[in-house]
Figure (cartoon, rainbow, N blue to C red):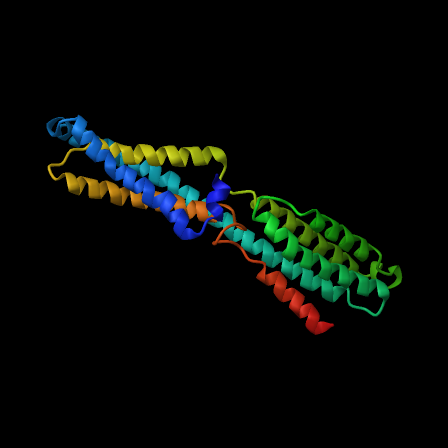
Length: 260
C-alpha cells in the first residue's frame, strides 16, 4: 500500500492523503454535535484544552522526528549515488593503460554503470534488485583482478583501485537497502494512529460557532496529513515523482566517452 502511494503523482497522493481525510475529519464535529448537546461539550473545554495541548505536542514531536529521519535518509541516498559515481570516475582513471586488460577493466566499469542506470533504477523503484547488476559488478571485480601483475599489482595504484571498488560495492548495497523504504512499519502505525487520535480529540470541544470549529478542525487535519504526505513522498528515495535520479552516473559515462 505504501509503495502504491509513493508511485502516485503528487496531486493524486495529496487527494488521497490530505483532501479526503480532511473532509472526513471536518464531518466529525457535525456528527458529534448532533449526538451530544453543546452545553455538555462546552463543560469539557477547559480540561480538554489542557490535555489537547499535551497530546498535540507529543504527536508533533513524533511527526517531526519522522520527517527529519526520512529527509536524512533521502539525503544519504543522494550522497551514495554521488559517491558511487566519484569512485567509478577514479577507478576509470587508475585503470588507464595500453594493456588489453586495462581496456577490459574500463569496458567492464562502463558496462556496470549502464546496467545500474538501465536495470537497477527501474527495479529499485519497485523495491527489487537487478540480477544483471550483480553480474556486472562481478565482471568488474574479475576485470580489475586480471590487470597485469608487473605494472599494477605491485604499485600503490592497484591498492587504491581495490578501495574504490569497495566504495562502489558499499554504495550499491546502501541504495538497494534504502530503496525498500525508510520508515519502519511500527512507526507508520504510530503516525497514523496518532493522527487519527489527535484530530479526533478536537471533536470533544464545543463552540457556539459550529462552522468555526469545523474550519479549525480542517486546518489541523490539513497540517497533520501534509506532514504524512511529506514522509510518504520521501520514504522510498528511488520511487515516485520525488526520487533520486542517476544523473551523477550518467555524467560519468559521458566523461568516459570524451576520454576514449
